[in-house]
Image (cartoon, rainbow, N blue to C red; front, side, top):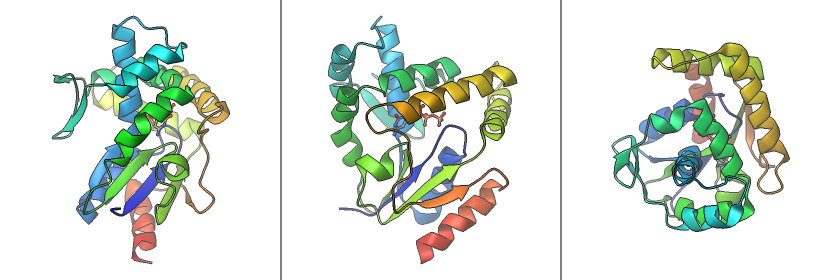
Length: 215
Ligand code: CDP
């Protein structure tokens, strides 16, 4: 199997940016596993599915017409890169992601992304469930306030609607759901390198992780 580096952690810690920078540095592929759950949530909502009913969602997950192409996320050929980034889509993702059968249906799809020369996989359970044999696992954390603030700037930068107190509340709610779910709850793998990015720039985080890569 191709080498894999896993980057797990809660929302807004800079995982996505770190993953892209690291992959670029190494010339490896990226797996944005959160985007898969976001696309599934969006597709389910468009179909009028109830997000708390696992069976239809798991069936949909098994045949989801999802593609990552040139940095874009495509659902049945339609570019949904922006549509999946709203807070509403994040909340829907976290609801569909709570079902064990949904996660099971997406497992092989994610594992198939591990192709030469290597993969940097970003998510919540990359190191614990999807790629437990990965030689380097990173768990990136930061305080909820700092994460909400980063998300706020990100959304504003894209000209999207954002409300800081609402974002803090959303992040806390999503953390609670991700931490308490029965399957693949958010936690660091036992052998993960823990990095708290609260007081670190993204360049510092990247340097810290590259140190581990060179070890
Ligand atoms: O960008 P952000 O960290 O806010 O979210 P994301 O990584 O796009 O993931 C959205 C939601 O999908 C999370 O809140 C998780 O509930 C879920 N997710 C998951 O359960 N497992 C993963 N490997 C990735 C995301």
